[in-house]
Image (cartoon, rainbow over all chains, first blue to last red; front, side, top):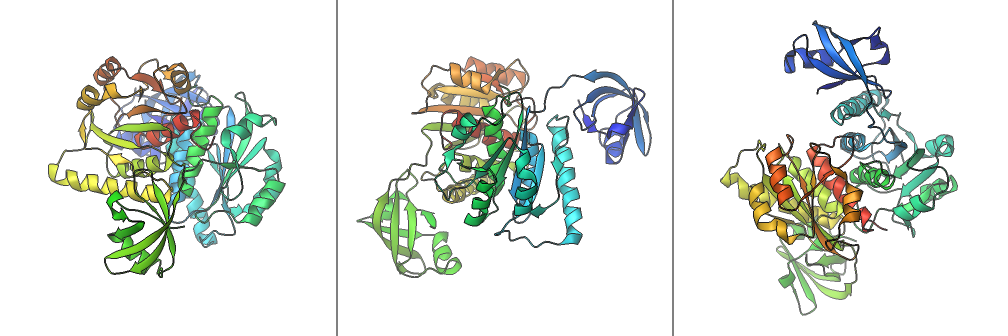
Length: 253
Length: 253
């Protein structure tokens, strides 16, 4: 069944009001008629089966038939701290990471980040990533839209945010890293299949520099390898996310 | 260090002869000089440290310094049987699947395959996928280039090849599927972290049809879920491959 995200305040008195581009999708692309059923999720984890009643130019309105008990969000909350890659690779990372089950993306500037910062383009770019996350979340039947945080310096993220995670993993080949399973097994800081928060740090194309790795480990990050086959930067995050969620039984058992 | 694949017969008498596009890459892109060192892999699992001695227009020749003991190939051999997706998605599947560690790709036509078969385009397309696999294998530091088999009807693959695998997994949401871990744990047919062969079947965008699933299960395929978040067809293969190899300790432990 077709799924749409609406803002929580679009749901009132057992009625849902869909606005924006989704209206065109409902009326012109799918040519739905009054009576058609869709699923509406409010982006915070609640979703509803809805029967459309009024299809207008600017809004599609429907009645809630029933709330749905969808258990699609991972218990383990995963944040991907991604060194800004070149070109449009971040688009792919956000799309695939959202399908797999990442809940937060933090694009960071690192010592070897090649991308030029441009404040004007910055908000446009973030809007695009957020839109990609919304579309991927709908397609994946998620009930939460992952959040894309502002691009920020990697060290600022470490200083301000690292302490709030139960576990921080840093994919890096430069040292003598441990296997992912070893770190997940030994970790006693509160991550289990019933919850916890993990941050996964992935460098840009050129990798993190050794000083950044040192600062990260001082902030509590554990250096891990993702194996002997070198994954591209845009592959590492979604693939490692899948392995982490699989480890905790969050990929279908 | 820069890596190049050469055919096994390009290695003779402790010397390696690099030909084709890689020569331009060595001389014009990287502007290497005689004395520079590269790694040459023969695509069957052997690799060598090589010192270049002659850089010509059509060939770069070098002396083998020593064979390398690179242990990068998974012990578990993974074949992805992929329902042909639309557009250029197969490119992404081959690239990402190669990075993760798939060794065989079999593009198959299924009941819901939308792509039109075109014998003329067919060989070009396969050449492109094989080239993508080679480049991804070099980048990932693999010593084997994954093989792209000919596009073939799904039922033909089932009839001719299914029996040769230790385990066949079919990602499908239509039935009451088991979790991936459950199937990997219970399987007694010879897959372990010391070897075995697994085929993973992923349908195209529209999925496999129920009759195809029935024929596959009669051929021994086990229906699995990849979890409650629906993965796009181009995401499912590489992501499931990572989880399977992680399960057997082949992603760095």
